Image (cartoon, rainbow, N blue to C red; front, side, top):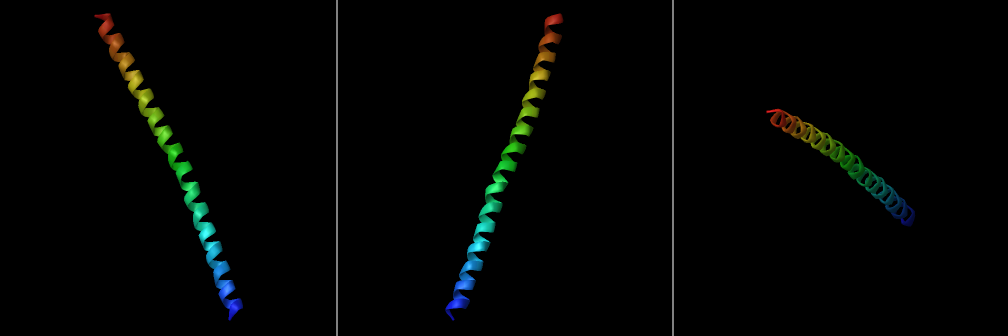
Length: 59
């Protein structure tokens, strides 16, 4: 009986460790995507504002 319980406990510990690793890896990817998208949006906004400024400055 004790062996079965210990085996089940060990299996549950392994499952929990696997889930923790999966959860810990997800935010890194999410943060990288968020940084990339933010960088592209800021770069685009900067280019548009420079273009508008040059267009207005010519007149």
